[in-house]
Length: 111
Image (cartoon, rainbow, N blue to C red; front, side):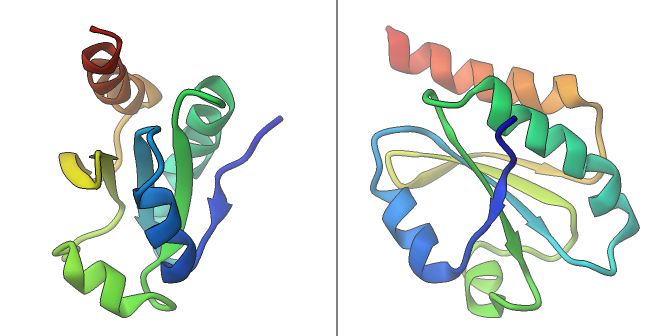
């Protein structure tokens, strides 16, 4: 079972230039709602393996990255395509919210 890995800013920059969409869960260890959606993010990583990169970034360890993308509330899930943010989801939500958002951007790639 694939899980979403925690990455640092350096790894993020590499994934950003990848041709696959990038899903980033901005999170923190002290954040209760972040723990609620964590299994959903792991499920995304598993379900979309090979079609999207799904990762987690701890905002306390990567403050500059969080600031660069305007993260003010967590959990915040950003979807990047071609190096640009194409979707922002803030707060806890069911798995379907995240998967539908990703599907929408995958389908535009297939056309």
